[in-house]
Image 1 (tube, rainbow, N blue to C red):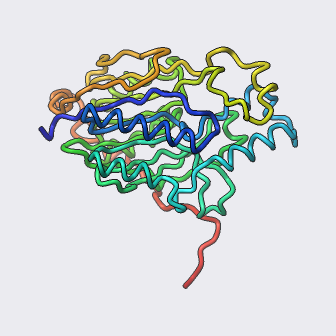
Image 2 (cartoon, rainbow, N blue to C red):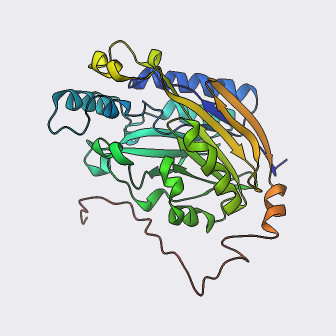
Length: 316
């Protein structure tokens, strides 16, 4: 049934700042999702290899503080360089099981020199092909101390069965213009990825669904004190101020009428499955469509620059 989509929300914790161990955990989760014949598996923001929780715990804004420099270097070593083929095993699993994937990761982008880090949301189709890499447009608050701002290249949508899926990272979902850029391309299933916590997902998930008259799938990670590996640099300083739970989950799904299909799930690690029917979108678009019959492009219109930004362009 092409108008039915089985979504798996992967609410898991990373093996924090350990690239290889987190990759293995992601692969195990994909294998499990395949046993339930999931069409789309979604992982949280920056899951691979983890969210920079240390910044709020180690005086992250202090200038030239050695502890933050050393943790940042560790973070960079454990981030992903897509061009080097570091997602190959995940691509093969997508192809083998004919499933699409949205994966939040830290990208050490080669076209920007290979040292700065971008919070990227990667879409892999059911053929095992990377179809978009969306670099977060604006890192939030202390994230700016370790993440670089992205560009509009990844503001793209993708066909999956009869659905059109698009996605944004965390507080990007509060930005009305990037949302509109996706709506205008026909998005009817919006993916919002988060580092964790229902205080992020509880309100915005239903709001976007009601605004767009689309399904909205919000997926968060978990992070607890026990998820910090013992070999983490300066672990003692991080744990000194760390609460027992840094991210409690909150993954959820709202329907095109803005009502809950899956309410926020807290403190539960694992896969959360839900089947969605596209007819519900058409039902709700009957009375409101933000880029269709209920829009006035002769009055207001959005322009989007989707050029991948780079500091240097070489003429051949």
